[in-house]
Length: 49
Image 1 (cartoon, rainbow, N blue to C red):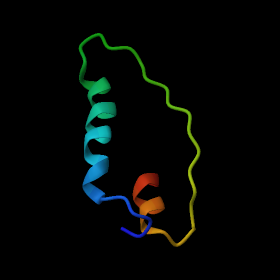
Image 2 (cartoon, rainbow, N blue to C red):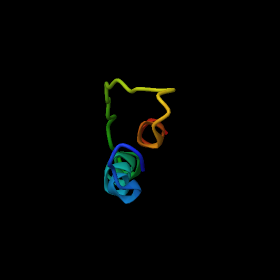
Image 3 (cartoon, helix red, strand yellow):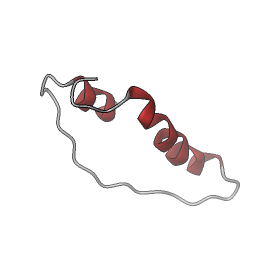
């Protein structure tokens, strides 16, 4: 990816945050973040998705 991040580097964080939905009687997880869009960088686009 342009910007220097390997596409596979985001797989583990996605699984980690997705696992919160699969816990029996699990609570909620709130993430507050900012993101860059329409920069022309594939890395920014992948992280945004």
